[in-house]
Image 1 (cartoon, rainbow, N blue to C red):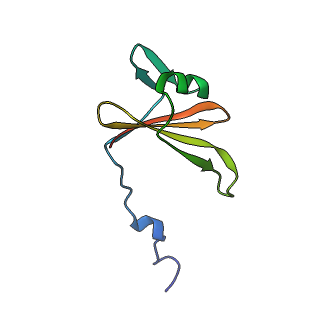
Image 2 (image 1 turned 180 degrees about the vertical axis):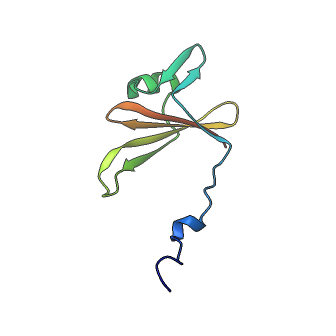
Length: 95
């Protein structure tokens, strides 16, 4: 086979997205708002202690921060990523 007749393997994959996952810059918690860039302490003040924590690592395995999971009243899970002591990302998904 010549190189021109072989399409790259990546061209044969279709990207799938889950419609029930939403990334946000903010999260309303009662009368207050958690925003990307807020401190980890502020996240704990608003959401409490996470139900689950997992490390966030780079491609070499070096520790970058943590992903905190919270179960919300409306049967949703909120995932807050903490990097360098600050909120780096906020996701909501259906549990």
